[in-house]
Length: 432
Image 1 (cartoon, rainbow, N blue to C red):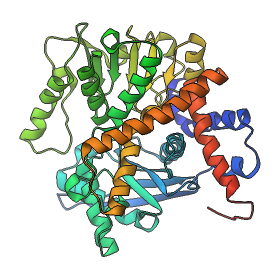
Image 2 (image 1 turned 90 degrees about the vertical axis):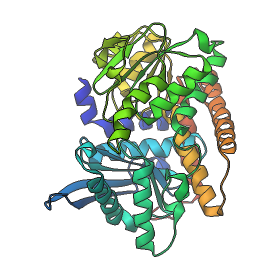
Image 3 (image 1 turned 120 degrees about the horizontal axis):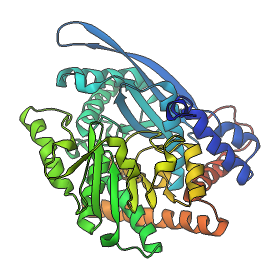
Image 4 (image 1 turned 60 degrees about the vertical axis):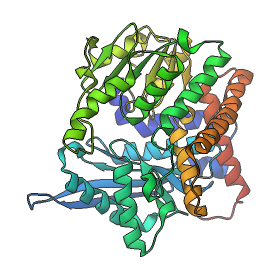
């Protein structure tokens, strides 16, 4: 099976992992049935008046996956490859990861099929506001709380939050997270996913008695999460030897400076007042240029995957030479590739644990908004570190005790919590 075929069956691939967990920890009956399908799936059309006066209509989706533990929580992505199956799968992963780190949320995810980099800033704002109008009936602080994802950021979330306020005829800051701090966003949110991934890597490295300065890292992707992970890891002593984006990859055995790379990328963005950075890491000088897929086969201690789903699949998994994988993106390793990595003895720090920093700090933003408080960034970072240390140790201990992979341990931790909550609600409920 090729990587493309695996991508076409993304939800079936994800659900196969769920079935394995249900069998392993004996989840049957109502709980199993409720876990197999999303709670709600909404498809919408988002009309946008373009700058030239023409009208374009973009398909969009919002999916809520098992809201037993709390309201749906998850990002919104703008990408030309977005489809309903992808959004459903991402919402399932969100439900698992929220439970893994013990957050009072179910899974949520949204998306619009669009290439946002082809839109002007005003067209992008119209799209963001139109999407909120389309899904407003299922949104709210107690029902579904969107956040940023691929190609959405604090600026886009600010537009969405403002639109929801207009529809609600009042201020509802807890309805959306990932906002600019000036609009009620949490300090520390922008770097949270990358910071959380580094915490998980640090905890694993400490268990392996591995020092940062003795650890080489290659990073696939150089978006927000990947950049902040690279920046913080570099500051801590890890040697970042390679990074990539959609246009290519760069390599330096001596190590790269993530801040210098980002400064070069963003120079054009500032000059032209762009929402997105459209330059490539390949503009960096005095480095070796690689094909972007070559990065996946480098001999490094840690390969951090921070791009999109199914980047490691059955066709390329045997070319992976990294000592360990860190999943900063959602679902970057297919289930078949994951099984092969287990056979090869290559540990994977799974997405449902490693990339939870963003949703954890989004939870703190939601709490601050509901309480009318503003916490200092040091407090946010402290709480993030404490939660990740506590929940990661539970996953690591379970993996050791049951002699299973970190992914299996994380899934069992999350699914067990959701299933127990379903059982506690009783047998007479007709719906979520």
